[in-house]
Length: 135
Image 1: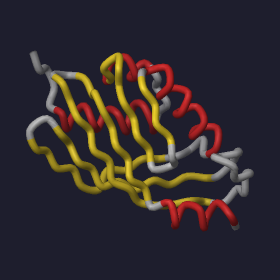
Image 2: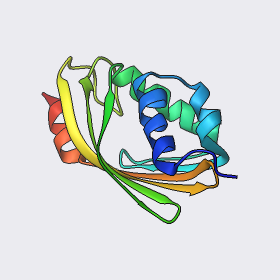
Image 3: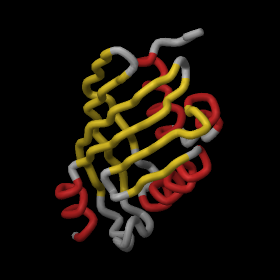
Image 4: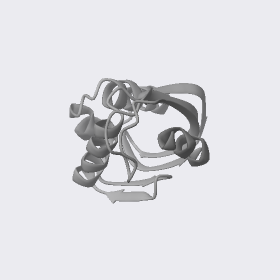
């Protein structure tokens, strides 16, 4: 039985999991076979692979903040327009640390089965991000 709204669960995904690095939320939010497709050319299946992806991103931008600008719900899917910002402090997908502030936008699509996220598709503005990582 659904105990929280899907919007509330997506807010927890961004705030607790990404902004606070509270990895307990991986088990709280995700189905065991979570499928993640990221615009950084990363696909993961399962909680462990997602956690490894998350660790790489946090190592590159430790203070990466995910902000929700718009959230829309239809059936069992949530669409989010987000803004991401932080400081590039470590290697990230082939880019050595620059100490540059980065800020870019993206859209994410979350699919649910009851109270668990079963898939996430992220489409980020990589052209803008890569320009900031090269400086």
